[in-house]
Length: 233
Image (cartoon, rainbow, N blue to C red):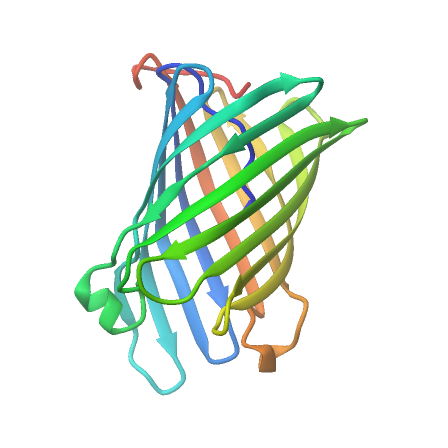
C-alpha cells in the first residue's frame, strides 16, 4: 500500500520488494517497472531503506520517455513499540535529485527534498488500523503534505485484505491527489509474498488526479543477512 506502517524487518533481516506500478491520468501515463524497495533491519526497531523506480512515461502526442526516477534513502525508527497496543514510528527520507535527463523530461524532480512523516498503528478488534502523516521540506520548490489511512484484516495466515485512502497535496501547485484503493498480501511460500493493489481518484479527469493506479509485486523476506528465508511476522 502507499501508506507506510511502523513495522520493521527485525535484526539483520532483509525485506526486498520488486514491483510494477502503473499510474494512468487523463493525459499522462507512467509505469514504474521495476519499482525497487530494499529494507534492512538494524535491531528490533530500526529499518534502513532505499527506494528507486525505473519509469516509462508517455503523454498525448509525445514519444515514450524512460529513465530512473528519484531515489529515496531513509531510516525508520519505531520509538513506541506495543505501548498499550500502540506502535508509532517516524520515517525520515531524502528525495535525492533525479538524473539530469530524467528531470528534463519530467520523470524525476530536479531538486532535493526532505520527507518527515509519522506512522501510527493499532489493532481494533479484527482490524489493523494504520495512519501516516508527513511533510516534504524542499531545498527549492513548493512544500507538500501527505496523509494516508489504511484498514486491514488477516483472513487467514496467508491472506490479508486492506483498504486505503491517501491524500497528496502540494502547496500552490500540483499534485492535488486524493485516491482510494484496495489491496492485500498473499503468502506464496516461506519468505515469498505476493503484493497487490488497485484504485483510483475521487475526482474526474479534469482534476488531473489519477484515473487509475495499481501495484503488483513480490516481497522477499530474508534473514541472517540474506542467507536464509524467513517467515513474515
